Image 1 (cartoon, rainbow, N blue to C red):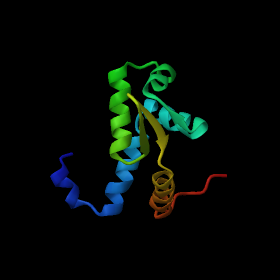
Image 2: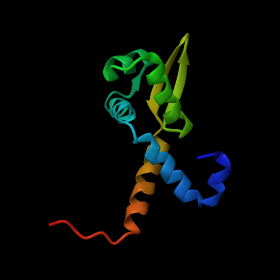
Image 3: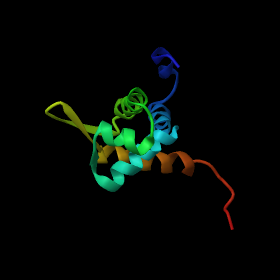
Length: 108
């Protein structure tokens, strides 16, 4: 969807869809899980844990960065990645608000 079409939707919907995109690929989910368990990581470690190529992992990191899921610290020639706790917290709130607006049947 082109950026010009995003103005057709309210801010909460656009924000929630961005968070959903962060979780829309198993590699990004693994990156988020790894960072939540280990605190920080590098591109090299992400390549090892996902089994994907460097360009693929870099693309996934770009998507996570675009939606402000990552904090990136430059250490010499190496980027150190960690989760942005404010964004993770906002993502949880956005998720709950989205699903709370529907009257889903309760599971037994």
